[in-house]
Image (cartoon, rainbow, N blue to C red; front, side, top):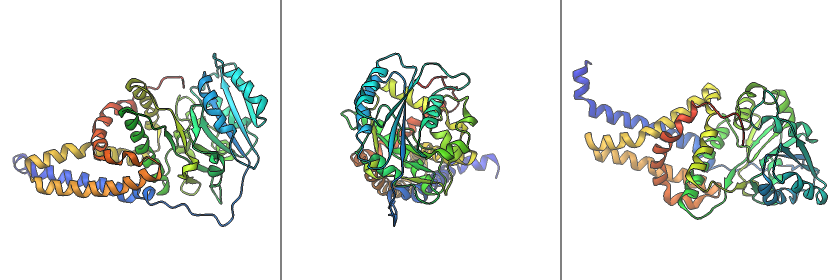
Length: 377
């Protein structure tokens, strides 16, 4: 077909492109994301409690430690456990706050770092020290600005270690507060969790979040810690999981008692800065993971422009029928997943947020090629 004929048929070509993009979206909804929405954890025949080391890294986090550390120290976990806090070159009151906690909580270990590591950027050096200091095989990671959702957080996360399990991916959400920005942040957090938890259930785990993540020391040492990406400031959570996670050794935990929650950013600039920093590691993922994530993002980005074009230049009845089918499937799958992750109040805004993602990709896509800053704070 020559160029003049192509120009004659361009409305049909646009409509076919819209159909292809819609099919790709439906494929992701039904093949991947429905796994989270309809997920039911398999109850183990025999339950076992394991010794656990919780590891937290903090730099100038005195306020967060005072607010959130009690929720970690007061866990109702009868088996052996410890809390390891690595105080990484803090200049605030963190040292004295940790000393106060240490007097009343014997399970707390504090590691004071007073020198910066050479050749290792970001959070990876203090986290490596914390993991090496940990006395127990199962390590449970969170951040100083995170509060466990319940006193059974440790118990719930460690309960997934059965058989060949070496990694457990948890959900780290944000506290519900007033304002539109809070809903926007929680939607983006849900949308990210929808992907990494669903992909893990499909046998292609690609990341986890350091706000709520657990793995065995053995798998950490087997992969030489963060050696393959020590030169990258970020990635202590997602790049390590991208390297170490497999279909057989990874499980997810979406028990509501296993969640952690953080205070969200309070202004647009703070949030966009955080997100851009997080996205600088995506280009280092395995090729197949980048393909899956990229295809989904591209189809999502193109969906609404092609919907408008198909309505205007081809047949709006057909275009809206396809849109309606996609929306119904999305509402069902996302609705079930939102409920699973305790974010069901966002469901009435699903269409708005879905359209918003077009602009989201515009804002944050450049971060994928941006050089990351050499610090983690």
